[in-house]
Every structure is written in structure tokens, then in C-alpha cells.
Length: 479
Image 1: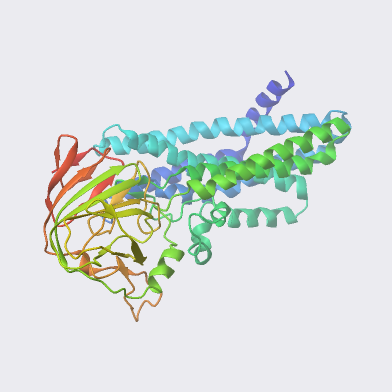
Image 2 (image 1 turned 180 degrees about the vertical axis):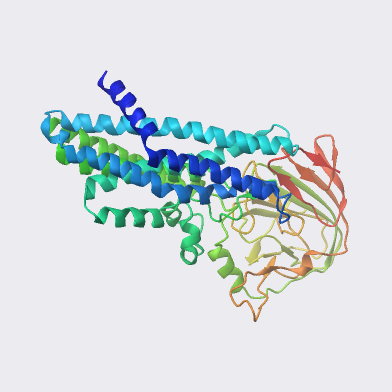
């Protein structure tokens, strides 16, 4: 009964607050203006995937107003001292916080849905049919708009509990706004460009890696489970801090014990979600690539032996497991070398159905045959997610100029071409990938969005210099 009264009370308080209303209206007006400007400018006019990118800027702009609102409201609650007057003052304060949080969530859900309808209307007008694309758009808005704005409640409450009505609270709010905002990866780019997707440091940011690139063709929006787990980790940690700071208002030992037990449970959940970020974050939009870049920059030229002639390929893909079989016109070497992306773990290599030894140096794999003349070679390996070739079960971009299957080449896939004007530039794709030879391909896999081969029954086949396979958002097409 009391909680429902508190919910109605805070709902009226929020609706009467000029600060909250201004922040909400400002967000909507800024988004409308950005949509209008985007549709009426010549620059990248047809790159509609980047249209919601301005969400992060809008959220950053209005977030300080939301933090100020929650700080002012709750610091006044603390000033009245109700938590010290009543025996169950601690419980009352928790009910107040939860009621205010729910009011904030309900209102922001409405605003997020309104923004979703605005973007959906634009996409519908330009001819994008209803598909999973719209669900990804909604998820993008939840992750980069709704989630960060809900977090602002915790910031305001946290500052109010720590600093109460002290003037230093304003400085604390400014610091929180600067260091934890959704564009902190832009503000502190020199730091975050050294952070890979599998580090702990991505937990320091709830925003996208770049506010200028939030959508890639076929891959979709900058989304993965790691984004949601990062938000969840922040929610849990901030809740723990607030609970521990508020324990000073308890007057009964039972409440203290319950608070500490709850904080411990939440802490275990936070560790679990934080650990999940390391395993579920993808590299599709991570451009730090520090390990990969350093690897190629330090990689030396490897000796190769290309004294053979490839006739055809047969590639079988089952999720991330690949069996690539090569048939030869002729061979004159017992140590043939092939180009295969170094990050892909090789399970086995066979020549004429007999397993043989092999060794790897960068993207060059050297096979030891018992004879110089053989008819076929098979390599079993696994596709993995990396910064240079992102991979997931549903979104994969295996381009023809990538060494995602064994190729006849004398160079690594990427080579470090020194640029005197850009000493820290990334390695470049090798020109040797573009060869005049044409091979017969037969590829068996599923859930293909696009390939340059022809669909025949349950597989794809055809003649080509190289093969591209795409999985992701869009309508399936093939030659």
C-alpha cells in the first residue's frame, strides 16, 4: 500500500519537474532535428544504417540534467531526515528509491518506444521491409539509450548519499558525466584504442566503440551479448554500492545482515556478468586490434613452396568447423605451403586420406608429404572471432580476399607496409590474394546470405578465383 502511494507520489513529482521534462523534451527534439538534418544532407545520404548513431550524443547531452534531477530530489529526502526518525526508516528509503526508479523506467520506456517509432517510420518510408532489422534497431536503442539513461538514476542517488547538500556534489556530478558517459570512448580515445574486446577494460564503457560507425552491412548494428552484460554489471555494482552506503540508516541488526547478504549475492552475480563480457564480446566493431596489429607488424616473411597446381576445392562448414579438401592437377613437392589465417586452429592435415605432419609460421602452413606426387589434401580447422576477421554463428563476413580457406600464396594475408606519413598505420591486405587462376568450388554450409557461387541442391558450386560467404542481416541472394 505504502509503495503504491510512493509510486504515485514520485510520478507526480517527476511530471512537475522542469528539469526532468526539459531533459526528456530536449532528447526528443534533438533526435528529430538530427533525423531531419541527416535526410537533408548530401553526405552519406544513403548510409541509413548510421542514422541512429546520434543517439549516443543526445544521451550524453541530456544525461547531466537527469543526474542533477535525481540528486536534487533525493538529497532533499535525506535532508528531511525521515530515515532517522522512524524505526523502519531504512525500509522506507529503499521503498522510495525503488518507487522512483520504477517511475523513471516507465517514462523512459515510453520515450524509447517513441524514438523507435520515429526511426522505424523513416526506415519504412525509404523502403526497408519489416524484418529482424527493426528488432535490432529496438535492441540498439535499449542498449545505448534506455540502459544508460536508467543508470543516471543510480548516479544521482549515489552522489546524494555521499555528498548530500555539499557544493562539491556538483563537481562529482560533472566527473561522473565526463568519465562514465556513453561517449567516453570518444573522449578517451587514446586509451580505448588500446583495448581489445576480450580485455576487462571494455567494462569501463557502456557506449559504442565509435559514435561514427554503429552499423555494418550484413553484420548489423554494433550489438552483442557483451553489451547487455556490461550494462547488467554496472547496474549490479551501483546497486551494491548504494545498499552498502545506505546501511548506515539501519537501526535493526536483522536489516544489516539482510543488506550484507543481498550485497554479497549481487556481487557474485556482478562477477559472473563481468566474466561473461570477456567471452561474449565480439570484435566486429572493435578497431583496437592491438594484438593482431602487433602480430603482423612483427611477422617476418616465411619461406614458401608453391610447386603445385590446384584444380578444385570442396569446403564443408558445420558452424565454426571447416573441412577444406583440395584436388590437384599436378604436384612436384613434398613440402607444399598454403596460406591460411593464423588465428584459425588447425585440427588435422591429410594427404590422400593419410594424416601428415605440418607446421605454421604466421599465415603460412607447411605440409610434409611422403611423396612429391599426390592427388588431394584435406585440412580441418575452426573459425574463430578476431579483430581482423570477425566471426559469429549468425553474422560472418568471409570475403574472397581473406585467407579463410587454404590458398596458394607466397605471402601472409596481411603484410606490414611501411607508410612514412602514417607510422602507426595498420597492416594491409596482401596483393598476392588477387590471382588470375580460376578454380572449381563446391561449398556445403547453411544460413548463407550471399555467395558468389551458384546454389545447386544442398550446396553451392561454380568456378571462381575465390569465394565470399556472408551471413547476417538481409535477404539471401546468390548467383
